Image (cartoon, rainbow, N blue to C red; front, side, top):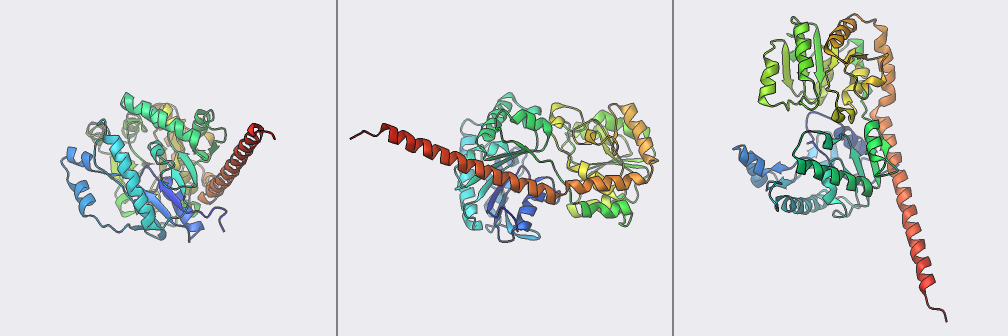
Length: 417
């Protein structure tokens, strides 16, 4: 039985879809541990103004004519999925205020429809600050997965990001971060910050290490060696020049980039000029083990930057659980395992490490699997629940202290007879 059984409003920075990141496993484990718990998973807004700017009426039609009955997540009847509607550009002077007011109204209706009672408010996005105190929540968790102030963006948006993040850090009852870098950044704002990295469903990847799962049909015609990256592909995260150098060094092999492609058209075409680079898009979460079974080496060509310094790469634990060799730039997570991961800080070293990984001794697979056992999602959820319990204890202590100080002050000020 779970130590925490409250209903939860789970506000995420991505939709509940076929690609699971951090939010989906956490929400799923909350739902699995307490089947009677009701969880409202709030994904990305249906952005009307953005659709119109892109000459698409799909968001408007979805908002006007979509089903009014909120769907549930496949396999989790106690998770209700909700996407609020965003009507105006946030760049308009009154647009953001209107959008946020409408979002709060929509959320209150969704909470009522889903039947939530005295819920915990779990916030992943900093821009969820305006929801505090508006949804009858009894406890607030702020879970930080990235340093969004470190990416390239308009200056007004960067200042707003920093201000919202700081205020949420101060006001959250429980503050969770995924990396040591984020912990150091936030500890001055909340003394009770807790680092809980990403995790892995270890059993899903065991068949890769044992060679008992057939490879996915999409990978069967790829020339070997297959050097593959899984995760979001965007210029703030990956080093495009390094990817090109790897493709040139292995012209008869395959460099596979598997995940959402957020590169602009220019950068996408830059990579596609190399005939051995495969940009596949997203596979379903359940398909990933069979996709990964085709890999010869997992590659992590991350840029080394303040943004990537804040990450806890989900792929680290998946790669360890699979037993597959990994070659990575010296980014957080991967650099903590120099005996299990090949580290390289330039193209020449990265390519040399790939050659070493292709001929590594087989016993390293078992060592990686053994390490992955310490990073299961079950263990991460135990840590999350203990953080919520500690936050509640601190909150109750503060409330009792304020009540005592208030009564003491009233007694001191009362007139004597």
